Length: 225
Image (tube, rainbow, N blue to C red; front, top):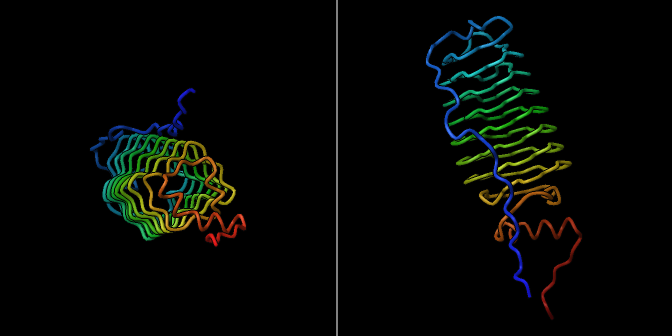
């Protein structure tokens, strides 16, 4: 009798293995280039303007930047290294993040509705509510992070890996998942549980989610007489 095959592990995300940018030429936030673009520069501190919508950041380093309440809608971030960013509210709907490393992020509420994240590595994050509804998320690694609420409703998520992550509430209504590895996550609440279709979880996670799964399926679980 042939040996049973072990299930294949989900495909790993393809993310930068080192900081994409080491830009050290400092500029002011007001020195945005022609066409609304920062290119290979170092940005620190808080902008004096509150509207950076539609601005592009290419091969930039953002360090200890204060972006609280700044309008970042439709920004493009490509080939960047972002470190030690704090914001009570990060407003970046319809933004595009590609080939970027983000470290030590502290955000109360991140509005990323209708955004696109491609080849992004996030580590050392402490986040409140992260809203990625209707977004496209592909090749993303999130590690050493705490998130109170992660909203992926109606999002398309491919090759996402969570490593040493604690999530208070994970919302998955209408989402489409493929090669999503949740084995390194502590999930306090998932809804709906059927939204996990396409994800990989561990044995202990399955046991933890069993009561919620039974409720959604309308199962009665009784002990033997």
